[in-house]
Amino acid sequence: MLPIFYQAHLQKYLSQSQLITLKLLVWLLQNQKQVKIERLAATLPLPIQQNSRRRHIQRFLSLKRLSVVLLWFPLIQQIISRQIGKGKQLIVALDKTQWKEKNILMVSAIYQKRALPIFWILLAKKGSSDRRRATNRLATCN
Image (cartoon, rainbow, N blue to C red; front, side, top):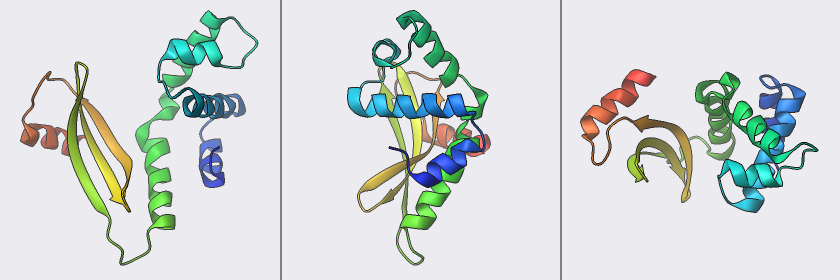
């Protein structure tokens, strides 16, 4: 389910029960293919009531330990260094997309037709946005 180097990295920042919750959520997302907390809570294999499972998921996902910088950046760095040899081409893409009412600015690393999200930010403005302003916001976040 999770590669060994993911687990080794995550064990530094998450407790054993948090790591188990993360593994269960990844497993559920792979099976359910939906990112709805109600749906995940209904199928989460914990011996508690569904409402408690929903609150458990919400509390877990709001942990400060699940930050992009702390957890995701080092994993992306390891993936890139393991999978992409020196001298090979890596494309970095900057993309803005709208998902329902939300604008998302995303930076991805693309290698062999596979994209790895590196960073993302929700933009405050609805609808079309000025890319220069969005790019400046992204640059100030780092």
